[in-house]
Length: 208
Image 1 (tube, rainbow, N blue to C red):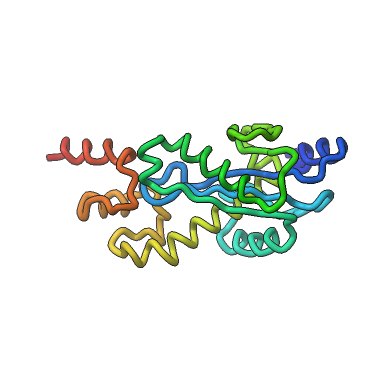
Image 2 (image 1 turned 30 degrees about the vertical axis):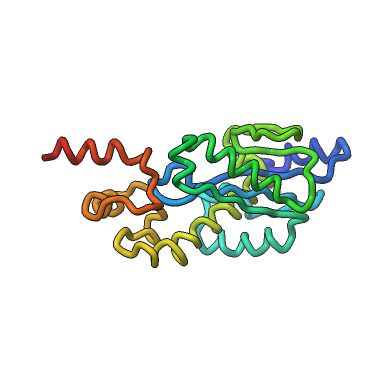
């Protein structure tokens, strides 16, 4: 199996004299509960982080370790969140794009080019959308790790204690059997995405 060069996009841009290249990604798009979280990360020119990969391919322990490494090495990084009520109002794709835009806008360095995981952001910055970008670009992978760890910590440290009967720390808001059963038993919380729950409650009505 051929080794993926996760710096191919970055190297091409660095060779043009660009130095502030931001990787951008989001997590939580498919969840029934909680915010969608995006991150933007600018890494130093030439930095190689061999273990950085798509956050979904990494163990929690490795993600936590790489989070600390990325934060310490990054030229700039930022996180943004869009809450469930806005997701319900503008739809999840637009909410994801909004979170990514806000993450870029709150960087303390203005990027010269954005590498984005399969999306575009409404900013006047040159950008490249890369399908499966979190597996193909070190910068996007770094952003995916920052976003994933941030959201997971919200699930474990904040939301789980607010709504203990839903098991948020375990499933992170995704539509697992445990989560769906808790929803049917207790109903949705203020942090559930109402626009995602129609099918779940339609299924319940069919059962009875």
